[in-house]
Image (tube, rainbow, N blue to C red; front, side):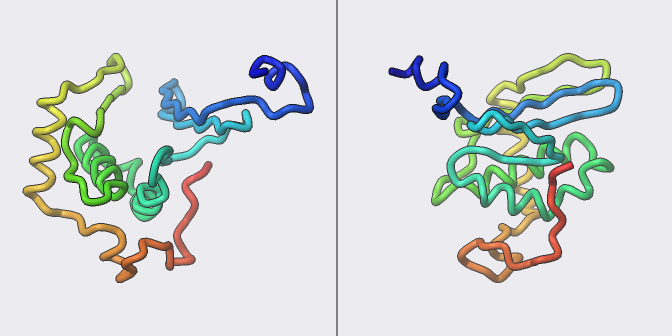
Length: 151
């Protein structure tokens, strides 16, 4: 039955959402391919369980990404992931960090390095959760002037 759904033009194909990061001579790119087969380019995006909380956090920060250091980008990513956790502590066992840059290969950081980064940023205590910034315990977006992250 599954093959019939993917071979007929009138049936919706089974699919998944995929987030792809790419780097070329024009710079870094982030693409989201949704289950419908459409794809979109974003400057920041999150998919998965409770991803809306991460997207809300990223919407407030993405305008500074082009001038941010790698450490700042990793920190913002970790804070965005933290926003999706409900009652869980952010640890290296619930996230993976990969980096790529001009002239360097794709690298996945080991768990010890990721945990050290998490500890470093938590000790700094630099960022309040999004729902505390808004004064909105539900985490809903209230600021209508937040710019969209899509390109």
